[in-house]
Amino acid sequence: MVIAGAGMGGLSAGIAMGLMGQEALLVEKRDAFVELGAGIQLGPNATRILERWGMMKSLETHAARPERVEVFRWDLDHALAQLELGAHFRSRYGAPYLTIHRADLQASLLERLQAIGQTELRLGTTLTHLSDLGDGVELVLGAQKSTSHVKAQALIGADGVSSQVRRLHWPAQHLHATPHLAYRATIAQNRLPLKWRQNSVRVFMGPQMHWVQYPIRSGEWLNIVALIEAPFDPNHRSAGLEEPLHQTWHEEVPLERRREHFRGALKGANAQLLELFDAVEAWSAWRLFDADPVRGPEHMALGHLALLGDAAHPMLPFLAQGAGMSIEDAQALAKAWSQPMLSVPRRLEAYGQDRWRRNARVQSKARANARIFHASGVLAGLRDWGLRQMGEKLLDMPWLYGHQG
Ligand SMILES: Cc1cc2nc3c(=O)[nH]c(=O)nc-3n(C[C@H](O)[C@H](O)[C@H](O)COP(=O)(O)OP(=O)(O)OC[C@H]3O[C@@H](n4cnc5c(N)ncnc54)[C@H](O)[C@@H]3O)c2cc1C
Image 1 (cartoon, rainbow, N blue to C red):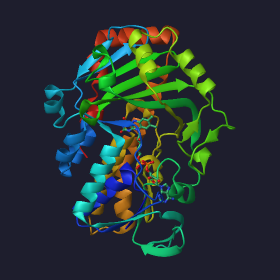
Image 2: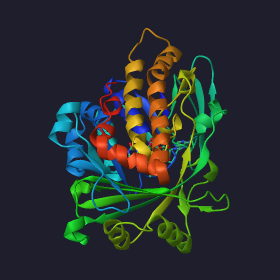
Image 3: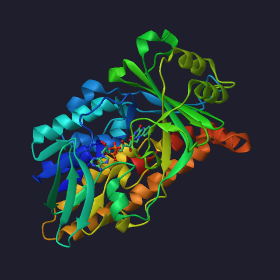
């Protein structure tokens, strides 16, 4: 088996397959694993699987365990609603809610992959072409100075939102640019006044924006994401990525435009947001792309090919579950693969059957959250009333966190 892309999904797929004794070749176009300056939330649906893969000890040295989720209006100091994430949450779902720096999660996944030892990792290698031969796949892999042709039983496209595998094998599936710009930053908590140091996930919702902050790096740092609606400008510059229109990418926002975005988003904001904004030294901006929810198993697996993670189901980060779904996908793929009496296409089909509805539901919920989080006027009033009345019930999502793959 060949897995294209060593992001969260590809590394997870290598681990899940390796634990079953399945060898794989994992190709990654980047030359090295670079440290991405951002955090990631992992619900118990994902940490349950990571625990099963024997990774909890390594995760616990880096991750934070937030005590609760607190939801605020952007202009008020007291929370509209909260959900406890501590011992009760863990015993309810059998796994913890963790927040972690992406680089730490990536390093833990890589370490586990290498310890299992069933996957050959080739960095600096890009999958460029593929053909389904009917009894396997033939792939063209490009490295800096050479091109090689490889035959394999199956190809798993875990090559992210701009997936080349999806483009070649599922050409009718399209991405579109959204008006959402994600500004990300990290800041050492010891640089903040005591009153703003925290061990919770805080969400602030305002008109056409929301802001999320949570601890990472054992709680020593705070990760901040400000999602601001700013019209997509096709003439903008992208940084470091060759195919901007098919990528969630790092957008170079001129300083004056960035100031304008934050001026609009933080108009009337409470003291906490304004002071944290002033404390941040550097923001990076990411344009968000979206795709329609998966419509059937054949959109995740066809013949000797399957898609996994963002390649299969790009989603807005309004439910903080993209990486979580790629981890769930990987576990489901390994389960489907462990049926040797089935042909490869049947095994992959079983994987698609298992996953497509779940991924479609999460994609749809993330889209719905985008409308609710950024609402204004009457809709915002209803949202806030609902959160005050039934906050805990709305924030706790057994269908999401209790999923057993
Ligand atoms: C602002 C923001 C906040 C988020 N917050 C959360 C969160 O809190 N929780 C959560 O679960 N998710 C979150 N997500 C989503 C999460 O980041 C993604 O869903 C996750 O990274 C997807 O992993 P992946 O492996 O599918 O794709 P990627 O991480 O994009 O990995 C794809 C890999 O494939 C490689 N590649 C691409 N093309 C090729 C090719 N042709 N050949 C070889 N290699 C190739 C790339 O270099 C890359 O390494 C967030 C996303 C954003 C934008």
